[in-house]
Image (tube, rainbow, N blue to C red; front, side, top):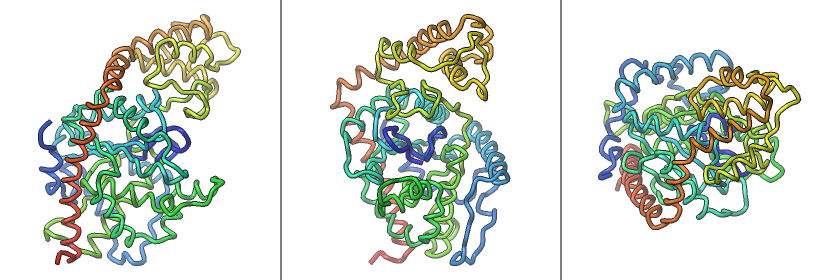
Length: 415
C-alpha cells in the first residue's frame, strides 16, 4: 500500500498506487466505535466469521466475486456517510519518501478533503517509520515530512478537523505491533500481495519490517479504531488483514466491555478516484521524471506539459484504451475544469496535441494557483508547520494511549 521508489504512497487511500481546533474529537469518541457497522450497513463481522481461528486460512485475493461484494458494501458505506458522518472515523496517510504530485492530489487529497468536510472524524498518518522498510536510510525525511504537511494544508486539510501525526511520535501505536504479530502467521504475511511483490521483484533481502508491514498498517488503522478506510481495489487484501487481526484479537484475548470488542472491523471505501498517469503515459513516479509536483511553478509546469508524450494522430479523441497518453492529458484537463474529457476532446478536434497541451497548461496552472500560493506561505513558516504536527501528535498520542490501555486490560496485563 505504501508506494515504492520516490512516490510517497500509502495504502490508506491512494487508489492509484501500486501498493500499495481544540480537543480532538477522536479522543472523545474512540470508545463509541463498535464492531457493528452503522445502521444501513450490515456488519462485516457476520461474513464468514469462524471461531476456529487457529486454523483460519482466509484468502484475501481480489477476484471478481470479492470485488463485487466489496463494492456493494462500499456503496452502502458511502450512502451512510452522507446521512450519518458522525458515525464514522476515517484514517488516511502517506509514506514520506518524496514530494507529492498532482496524481496524489487528484487520487487521494481531494477525497480526504471531501470526507473531512462531510464531518467525518479524520486522522492522517505521516508514516515516517515505514520509509525504512525497503531502504537503508531515511533520506530527506525532515524536508519530505514538512513539504507533505504544507501540501496537505494548502490542499484543504484543516488541522482543527483532521488530526495529522507521525508514526515515530506515537509509542503506544507501535507497541500494538507486539500483540498483533501474535495474531498472524508467517505464511499469511507472505501471501499478502505487497509482500509477495517485494519478495518476487526486489533485488534486496526482505527486511523484517517489510514482511510485517501489513501488521503495522493494521496498527495504524486500529489504534484509533477507524471504521472506514479509503482504498483501491488492489488494496482490499490489506483491509482484510486488519479485519482479521481485529477479529482474532476479540476471539483470543477478549474484551474490556462485554458488549463490544476492543477493535471494530473497518470497512473499505472504494473511491471512484481517477487513475492519473504520468506525462509519458506510464505510472506517475518521480523516479521516471513524469510528474508535476504540487510545489512546482507555473513555468515549470508548462515546460513539463510541453514535453508530454502524445501520438501521431492530430485529431484529438478520448480513448483511454487505444490512446492512453492523449486521454491522460484530456483527463487532467477535465479534472481541472470539472468537465467531461470526451467533451474537451470534441472541442479540440483537429487542433492537435499542441492545442491540447496549451489548454491543459492554462487549466492546470489556473486550478493550482491558489493552492500553490498558500503552499508558498506555509513552507516559509516552518515554525507553524512544526506546531501543527506537534499538536496533532499530542492528540493522536492520547488516542493511542487510551487504546493501548484497553488492549492491556483485555489481555489482563495491567498489574
